[in-house]
Length: 130
Length: 252
View (cartoon, rainbow over the protein chains, first blue to last red):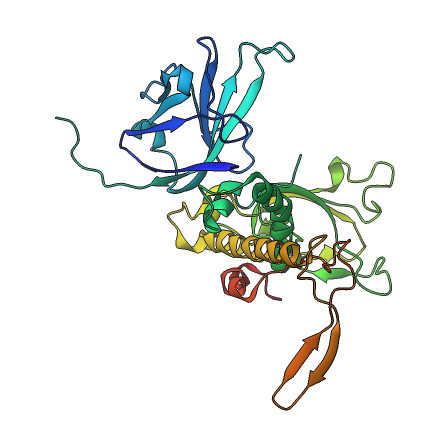
């Protein structure tokens, strides 16, 4: 399927969601190599730079992509609340890409994996923390 | 550079209810239809909608006879794009001929904002009608003798409704655009389904019609080897008119 997921994420809240990445046929499990880099991009309209471009290295606020099981393409994406603070509540485009270390032409080919709809919902402020 | 989008493809997917079930074929069709829908909205509203900077040579020659050297068109210059947000520069040169004359629109032809003209900005901070007013003078009627560089259109935040001033909330344009795209998409899907090559559901022309106790009979398909559809209609549906009508420019 072209659109594979729908995720409702909340501003100023930590949002975690686990995904099973597949090949472009949407059924074959994607097997990740240790040197591959999984990215999750979030944005809308004709942006050349996505609003969020997540990698295994976390952002300053803690948003990141974590590979849970490379053999089965299982990954978890964390959207930190602070990274969503500047998003106007609404619908955005989410995309997984893989920088494939085994590719040579082009090198480290940037491959599309999954596309989905991410809805950012506004939340109430107030007290947080322990 | 492509024309800026009014809505994102993900919003369209969400709107037609296929966030988790959209196939590649459906995404391909939606991607094809989307710009037609946005274009239909732009044509209905009568502007480019999305904010940009424009360079225009005015006035247009809308009359049968060219009005060379004949006084003016008045104090109000009505810009093609709206709402007007700011004016970068104005140059007035009766012998410019849309900038094709040598040395046209030189430094001596510049008008100063606040002295020779001002943008007709209202309490919302924009000029919804796209007017620029000449001060103690009138705009020349010579075709294309005015060169104006200005910024007009709705910002991405205003189109999202992410504003504190409700007078510049343009989210109705996005809703109307989503409705237009969804209607065109549905039309395309139905057209493909009923008129596909090899389809057995192709309907031929009317073979008989009865008025009292109305009944109509369609002939069978004339061909199942070609696409029999008459094409997809892309127009602003009735359901979207209410969302978009307030963003059109009235004749003032």
